[in-house]
Length: 325
Image (tube, rainbow, N blue to C red; front, side):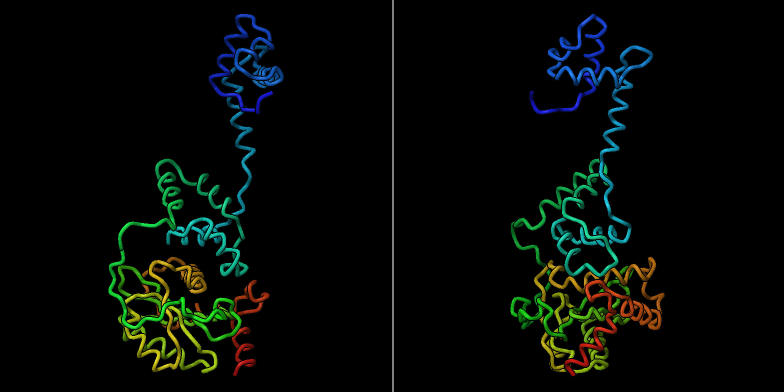
């Protein structure tokens, strides 16, 4: 017997014609290339007042097919994280690895690459789905030419030179930095987060030029113990043009991610999504107050994290300070 294939609509119409002219089940099976037992099941499934109805059989078959689709265990918070990362042109595999690693803070469902692909297949339609999957599957492939148009910052130290202990989160005091831009790029939130404890400090900026960003980071770091400030990793944006002055002011090393590589500071990227979620859709940060922004940071720092053994970042940073200071 050849491999099993489901009966198609056109085959059901053929079964009706052959049945009406007196073919036996065996003869019908030979004609359409199916096993006799398949034809028998098909005739029973489409029985309508004693006769075979191919339309009824087709409807029943489609209903059963839908019931066989597994329920995808992606809740709304998890899909928001996945969708945000897909928007950054991450592949489903990279997103799945992120969810099982740095993104696993106890607030999301851990899913596989295959589940993400299946979710896209089921929840996106037509040309939109086609374009999305095409874009995702091309992620990471070499592009011709140099598309980087931003000015290069002078004297940058790339993340390649960052000590391996930072990747492994062995020691505290290594931070990541980023900007969350507000509506129409007229405001921003400056975010810095400690990699080992996930402790976050947020500042509201109505201007995010290089000087404003540098001074903002300096102000927040002045509140921390010097032993907890060993390095900071950030993007190559022009807001970090004063990185050499920042290094001199806070006595720490500044590392830069490669262009278009947000996963290289995944802790901060994930924190950004948590911050957006807590802002309840507010995108014009000019409507916020510094008190509100500080409150968001406090709520995040007092939220238990699975990656910390369900301790809070606030507890973790204090523990690190006790051990290191």
